[in-house]
Amino acid sequence: MKSIYSVQQKQAVLKRYHSEMSVMELVTEMGIPRSTIYAWLKKGKETGEEHSISRKAYNQLMEHARRLEEMLSILKTCGCAPHDPLSEKLKVLERLYMTGGHSVRVICEALDVPRGTFYNHIFRNKREESSYEKRREEMRGHIRKVFEDSNQIFGAAKIVAVLRGQGINTTIETVRQLMREMGLVSVRKGAKKQYEDESRKTRNIVKRNFQVDRPNAVWVSDVTFFRFNDLYYCVCVILDLYARKIISHHVGTNNSTQLVKSTFREAYESRKPEKGLIFHSDQGSNYRSRAFRAFLTERGVTQSFSNPGSPYDNSVAESFFSSMKSEELYRYVYFACTSPLARGFRSTVSEK
Image (cartoon, rainbow, N blue to C red; front, top):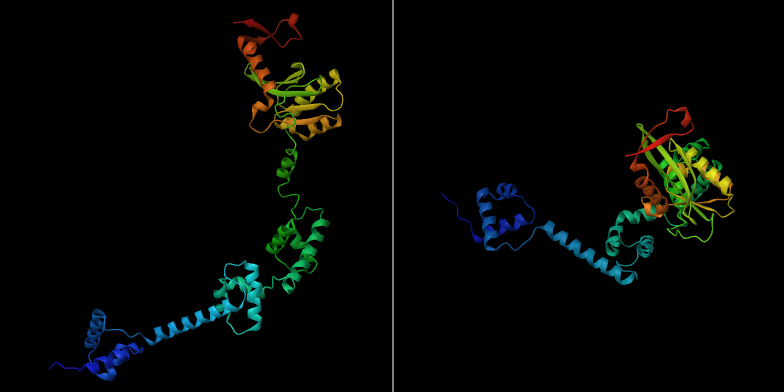
């Protein structure tokens, strides 16, 4: 026989269920079938009769409301707002934390500061007066001393090894971070790039100003290649901008520093220029070699370079080679001289 339950029984079951009592507990205690209880719960949801909430949800809402009231109270009295700078908010949070009365979670939520950031500020002591900062300052002194004693050569790893040998324990990452803060960079790291960057600071002195008012003011130079008997020959020339005249040239099988050096020496000894001569070229390795640059410096010559990938910066020398090839080299066929009468000549020419 089907049991009939009163409205009061139904309401009592629903109330007990919403007070965090499980369905199985209700079945055991009240002797009502489980299917009946589930039917009542389903009907209550469909008809909107279920207005009560569980005690857990109620407690959560009350806790949230209390926290919001506490946050509002903090914002009214702290003299700081969530959109203020982080440094100011950290000072306020530190004061609130030291005076007590509020949890860290609430004060951080009130001023919109991550708790990790606040704990980092308080417990890792990144304040100026903190022991953490004092230890870092002492470590900076140790690092700087080892770095200077190594003639600015040692990097983080070697500095850590030296410090550990002195009984000072630290990590490579800490030393690397402090070196970055102090601007200490080993001369070994990126030495080539620093050297090249330094040499480029005042590199292009001519700046496409190819008009000069006197001889031996600016010389320009370049190297080109020409194929003869399955071999490539390098032709280096030096041109005086005043008369646009070739004052020296050499031919070699290698585009080397020696080629440009011998070409310049010939021009220098024949023209004997005064101090202040500017020598302009592209950025070939032979022109930029340490030996050639020292050779020019000894003679008081200022070196100028074209910008990378810009042939127009050395257009006078480029134009000369273009004319030489179109008017001479590409119009004739060259072959080796074998006659004793022609001894001393590299080649003879024959019109096509």
